[in-house]
Amino acid sequence: MRNGNGCSARPVIRATTGSFILSDKKILVLGGSGFIGRHLRARLAGQTGEDQVVATYHETPFSGGLKFDARVESLAEVIPGLEIFSHAVILLANAHPDDCAKNPEASRALNVTAIKAIIDQLAEGSVCPVFASTEVVFDGEKGGYVESDPVSPILLYGKQKAEIEEYLGSRVPSALILRIANVYGSDPAGSGVVAGWYKTVTGGAETVKCAHDYIASPVHVDDVAEAVLRLVEGKCLGTYHVAGPQPLSRLEMFETLLEEMRHSGPVDVDVVSCSIDDFSTEERRPRDISMAVDKLVAETALTPRNLRSACRHLVNAAEQTAA
Ligand SMILES: NC(=O)c1ccc[n+]([C@@H]2O[C@H](COP(=O)([O-])OP(=O)(O)OC[C@H]3O[C@@H](n4cnc5c(N)ncnc54)[C@H](OP(=O)(O)O)[C@@H]3O)[C@@H](O)[C@H]2O)c1
Image (tube, rainbow, N blue to C red; front, top):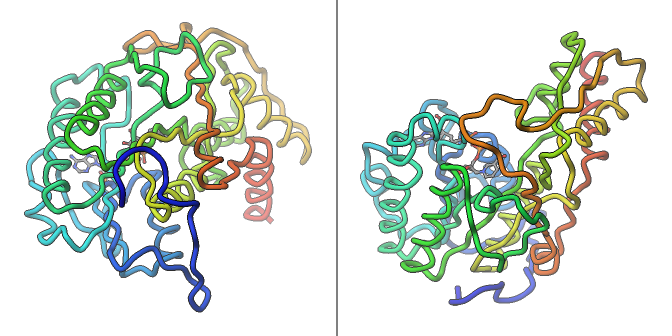
């Protein structure tokens, strides 16, 4: 691993009997039971072998997972001997902006205090932290944010993430910060906004309200997992935006899904275009938090998929399940 931004080299994937080598050391996934964590565990285990990946959960157990409550336990208590890991992917968080705003002390205890303690222990064990930050470290006034743009969060959740970015910058220069855009998946029964809409529409909703003025660069959960793998393998350090290929409003996202659903048959739902301000939220939402993904693409050769192809995949998967 080297100091400073960027990858030590374009990732070189060495094939060994159909799998790949990351390094002799293991990868730790903190928050392996969450939406991103489940997909990341599967991707890493598929690449490195299951015994190379150790992952934690809090309330949602999974086979081989280690129970860890970051608010009351120290990482070293739960996982002694951190030196066996090259990287620790820090996913665990309260990732719900409204919940963070409603419960500022509890969310700070997890998203800031506990994460700082984890980072300190990782630094002692010479483990590279891979921190899951967010697009809402930006204020949404500009859109198309690049990694060098100054952060200016307006949501408490974004402020908590920005505080950890700053902590890493001052304490652990050999870290990887991933500012992840809004994540969706193409499992019709799974998590994320697109699958949520699919369930709403197929559940018989007559009307769906979507904001035309809330713009992000949605990214597929499997592309997030792939980005982590490639950045880790490339020994990359510094800050990367992990985003989809294009900025889209919520309304454009929903219409894309509907168009793909209508290829399979009529869909009877009224789409109501509204402002993000028409939704009840604890804090006013930023407007255009889209991020440019060029740095990630240039340094890892990853091509994030577009939303339309993912929606098509979701619709096809649902049809196959129903058949
Ligand atoms: N999803 C997105 O659109 C998105 C976008 C940008 C950034 N991110 C960031 O990416 C990370 C993962 O997001 P996600 O969507 O996968 O979140 P998620 O599904 O809500 O998962 C959160 C994870 O944190 C764990 N956790 C919760 N409380 C904990 C505690 N007290 N101690 C230890 N672990 C605890 C959960 O464990 P249990 O489930 O077992 O309780 C779960 O594994 C988060 O840091 C989030 O801020 C997500």
